[in-house]
Image 1 (cartoon, rainbow, N blue to C red):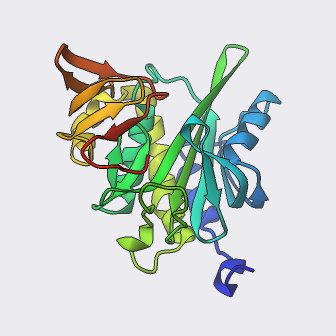
Image 2: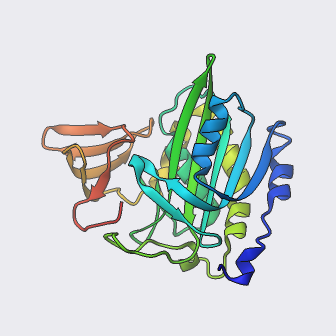
Length: 262
């Protein structure tokens, strides 16, 4: 049984809708007590022709997904899990996950850093992650942006390092509080990205880049000091053969100087 305080979470759905609706007229906010995965559900809806703009939140996910097929465990009150789905046609998709991460980090706390391409970190520990999926129907594209954040300390079984929790830097914060902080700015950031891309965000990302200057290695064999990201959002790694640009979200990157949870 969840604690009593978690059994009736007061989500700021109406306040989020009021802030976003003037800029996105068909927008809605939907809260479900439990679902397999908010990303999976919005992708199902999109394939069935439901492509309205929606923020779908689940208090509990039974089959949450992270990048590269990893499981994301989510229980009521311990985590914040939601997906933003909307018709989307940016000039360039490159760097979208970085723009999403930057918006979340700036809305949460100065201590929240960004690990390329889609993780949020606090002091070397993973706070949360982003999963972006897209569908194309009849020449129109629909994007689903999934967000998972640890609010309270999480179990560390099977992980190289214990995950971070937002309560580490914001004692007393709740999942509802966190949603209220991030939702409206995230919608605005995604809309702005469609027009201007990642380049205007490059320096702001650099200020929170936890890989900058570290020796890193990738899952496809590239290793060397991380030089930050370029104007398209690609990670730059200095190697003996020159600077290599890594721009595939299917590549895992880890600092080589220490074993970190990815």
